[in-house]
Length: 422
Image (cartoon, rainbow, N blue to C red; front, side):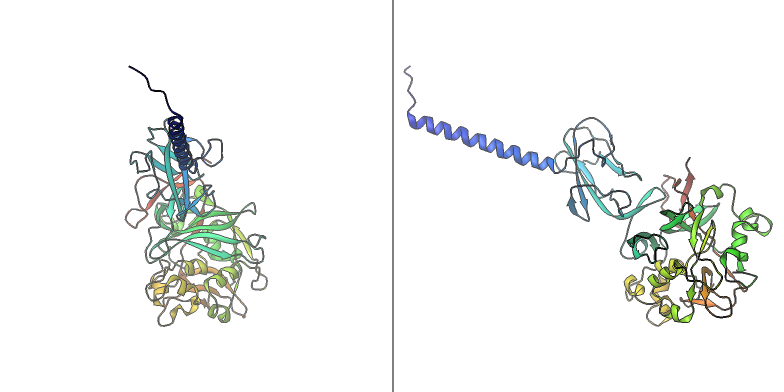
């Protein structure tokens, strides 16, 4: 058989084909590399802290509010992992056998991975760890809300930055927790000054039911540091679980869970401030050093009462008056026609009682403190020796966590707590 000799044009054709194939391979390699590269996180970075089950390469894409980011949100950013939306897979599809979670120290945990070059899409949304449990924030209805407010006068910090907190709001959110062998409720993750004068976030809780009707101060003084109610809650029969509080006072197992903090006890001016006091204004007044003459503006202790602003931030609003509408109306005038949803959709509102708050009133010859009234407004009580309902309120230590027992924080299935070793 006689072999044909290649002509020059055959060499050119072969060269073109080889060049084309090489280009296709190069382009494909680049595309594949870029597809994976956007997901890649080096193991020596401080983002992923090495809790991946099974060997093999793993690549991460970080989405914050559905926008892809180069880095994962850090602890304290106000974002948590949306575990339901996040997923991993080799082909881009969801491999349901692979489980993803985020720990409280912001370690991503991936388990069930069996193939190399697995890609994980991590979606981060507004939310917070509440006693070790990640809770997604909501923007309507019952649930955990992100709250941003600007601190003033360096009373908590001297940086002037806007503080972000997370607070439960709505008619009946799932914020029930068993504490002190009783049912309490979580106010939220709140900025507070700890005993060493550093600003940190702590979970704040309040008793679900009143311990009874008591005077704010039987000695008719508006100084919380000397008030009879303060002494009862922090050193008296309630704290020692004696006398009439032998069944409702603090147990020896509950006391180690309580964080001793510095409470702001700034005063609130009378009618003029209340009648023009939006929630943010009341919040700021509570944290100033403006007080009734002779009163201190700070108190270091364990058990107190809710602030008027705690009540204000606990509303979700409704269809006719949204939460934002309620924030733009002073709390005193939530009693006005059309604003009923501001207090009706508020779990700290009580229809038949008028509980005390922590804030005293500045000015006037008579000692006064703020109460939440049945009409939904906050008002100055003209007689603090008068008995009104008391809801003990406190902050929990950081080593208090929710047990992973499947409870959902509802009234029938309140979260159970455990105290870890510090």
